[in-house]
Figure 1 (cartoon, rainbow, N blue to C red):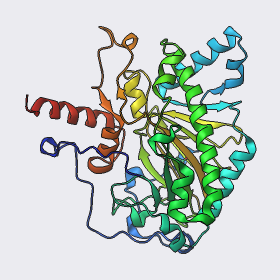
Figure 2 (figure 1 turned 180 degrees about the vertical axis):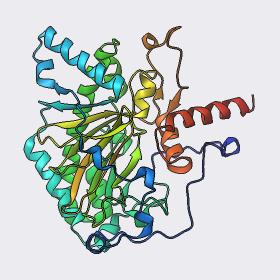
Figure 3 (figure 1 turned 90 degrees about the horizontal axis):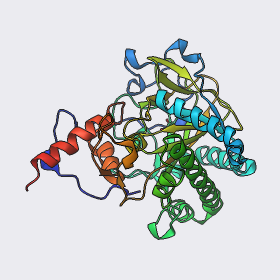
Figure 4 (figure 1 turned 60 degrees about the horizontal axis):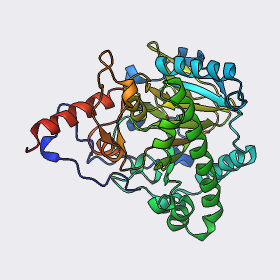
Length: 385
Ligand SMILES: O=C(O)CCC(=O)C(=O)O
């Protein structure tokens, strides 16, 4: 996927915050079928001591369970309770569960089965959809990644989705183009799954708008023609899970993430200075705020550091839908969230610029938004008048 096609002004790159992230060293091929049976993992997958999984992180992070059915019931007391609890979670760490989401259980099961079937294929077959450098769409393993150290113990398949066919982002077509006619069914499954996720994310946007006091339509309208990303994560078992990570610590640069985990634990969130687990709940989606929504809320809602650990025994899968604005939408908080006590925390930007920043200049972490803000402000200050 080429989402961020606009070139950034290279002359104003501040190297103290925008580190070049391409590397010439050749990372090993991540062939899950082979690596998951090796007793010793290649050194590129060994994470530094301070980032290794912590044995005490099995403590559960308590996140509110948001019942969208209760909200739809029209009962004002139920609606007020939901928005209060969403606001509380988003101000603390940005994570919550949603249930009664109206996502068809058979579609969800089919999406997991399709992911399992894809990742079970031989490496050469998966590489037909291989992600190209600088793009965020396609099959990626450490072999195709941008880094040569702290490699994640996983494989992913990502694609773009937009509910506006004119914007491109038709999942079915992307999959058939990349993998061939035999994969039309896989394409159909994720086309339907992404359409359902897009509808659900707009419903959650209504809740977020209410919880921030700007009305249910504001963010829903903003994301109506979203240009989003879907990612299938597959974490093979690892004989030395205490040395590595499936997904390294990061904040999502996107707006809202809707994640469904299979029945294997692995998702951890850094809340109040400690890593804690969010265990799978088959009937629920894990939702979290990303950097772009943090900017839209003028910093009131948090985009929080999270990661995924792996285990010795079984593979783990997760399906992540990342809601992103249409590429020409200016990310700017509603006026009601800006006042003398709450001045603008971040400058205006568009999503492709932030995406390109995280793809080419900065490895997404908990400071992405601050680094991006300094970078934009510096660019503005040095731009010719
Ligand atoms: O697999 C998970 O539980 C987390 C995945 C994740 O954080 C990501 O794909 O960005």
